Length: 149
Image (cartoon, rainbow, N blue to C red; front, side, top):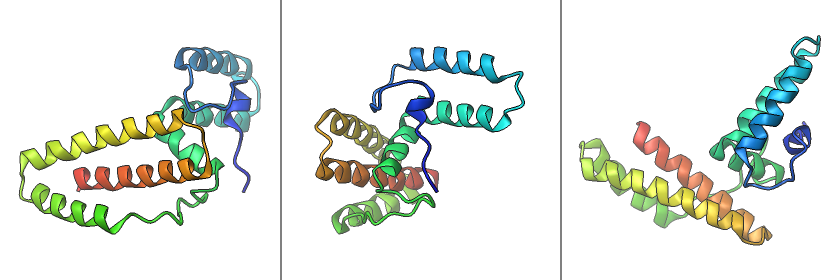
């Protein structure tokens, strides 16, 4: 399965940081063009592309798929470190007991994680940096599961 180039659909440079105002404007233009056509697949593609490019977390995942660090089925070769997993086990125990400070700590870790990912996207995107982004992405997914458990 080939991954669609959502940036091409919106005639936007391939860049993690998108101008959401321009993106929305282009989205509305495209919807207006295709709304009365019989090209439901095109409309569906435009909606999906907008949804992904407009959402920071979905856009992170999209880039990881573009780079081949996440497979189309969501699987990946990226492994979380043992140190991270041990820290999360302790944090999970605290969350399960209803410890409000552990819940707040997890939320703070999530916020810090997203900032770290944004900072990594500002660097030169070497293979090492891309892998570091993937690592942070999967740590973020793990932290979100802790909060939602």
